Length: 173
Image (cartoon, rainbow, N blue to C red; front, side):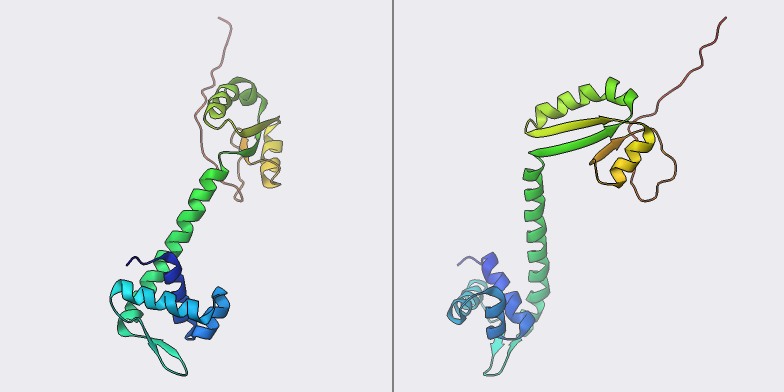
């Protein structure tokens, strides 16, 4: 018999509360449905995880070892689901970018064309602004991304260098 995520959630709820009644309330399940889920879990793994008495429920030694493993597994499961949902969410929506004029007019169009080929359902808006405005727009959450020259100290933001620009002096001969 297969063990299900639902059965593991039931086990954690009972182990955490020490009570079938309280676990039923948390899970919004009837007592018979919870009992069946726990029984099927125990059958599926081949042994008892819970000791039941008229007053309380406690973990067997095997259940005590299994409990933290199941907690981590369920946390990983939820995190994985969130990651996949976020991937789907990234495939559509809106992206606001603030960029300094030099970058907005020269390099950004080619980057955005490639981005649009990969993510055609994301609408992109570019705000062509000076360095100080780029930083402020990111701080105020008016844009998701800013592209500018190094603005100096701004500990409340994270920066990723994109490339180094070489400036040269041009002089008459």
